[in-house]
Structures are given as structure tokens and as C-alpha cells.
Length: 195
Image (tube, rainbow, N blue to C red; front, side):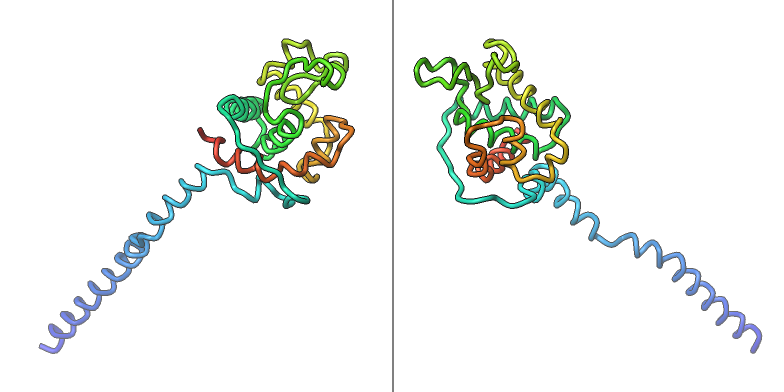
């Protein structure tokens, strides 16, 4: 009887041990934490990471303007051209800040006496400097692509302050003026990158 009792106890202990071994890993994988973290990852994908938009912080006092429908459409056109060029959100921030400084995101034609030489379009590019024809540089996709092509040629542009990267492409008489638009440009990219 002792051996029957002993075998029963060992059998029960064996079942309990086997159940614990098999239940352990299953229970560990039943943790609801991964399910709870999934929506957070989805939210991050919807909005660009602010650290990527302004990796060096803004420089100086920031400017801001209210945008009309045309300016918002031009913002979206710059973002679309940036994506099409295979460039990231930071490139869109640099592009939009540059266009904010150059034209306030208005696709400007020839301004007569107020014109800076033959500068036109969102980026105030000049046909006489080889940016393209008037028709090309007043096309938001073309002018953005031309700007981005110049930006790609700037070694280390991602590691530069925005105003230095923009100035290297634009060669402006006012090189520090691009900096004032960085926060607004980042806000616009965050708002419209996935719209």
C-alpha cells in the first residue's frame, strides 16, 4: 500500500510539474503588455518624431504667419515632392522654412520693380542662375525637387543648423533669416506629413 500511495503522490507531483513547465511559457506569452503597446506604435507612425524634425533645436526668435489655402496647398506640394525624392521629414522642414523665408509659401511670379533680379516661385530661384525656366521654377514640385537636389549635394546637411543648410543651397544675402521659420516649418510637417 505504501508503494501505491507513493506512486500516486509521485504521479500527481509529475503532473503538477509538467503542467507548470508547460503552463509557464504559455502564461508568459499571455501578458497583455504587447497588445497595449501596439496603439502607441501606430500613433508614432502617424506623426513625425519631433526630435527628427528639429534635431538641433531652433535658433533665435521664431516667426509665424497665418496661412491661406494656397499656402497650405504649397506646403503639401513641398511635402509630396520631398517624399517623391525619397527624402525624410527633416528635408521637408528645411524646404518649408526656406520657402517661408523666400516667399511666405506663395508661388511668386515676376514682381516688377520689387523683384530681386529674376527670382521667382516658392524658393525665389533664378532662371539666370540655372535653376530652370520660369515655367519650371514656378511649378511647386519642380522647384522643390531642384532645391532638394541642391540640399542633397551639401555634405552633412542633416548635421547642420537649418539656416546653414538652407543658405548653402540658396546663397542668400541674408543667410541667418531662414532660422526664424524652423518651428513653424516643423509644425507644418508634423501636421501635413501624412495628410
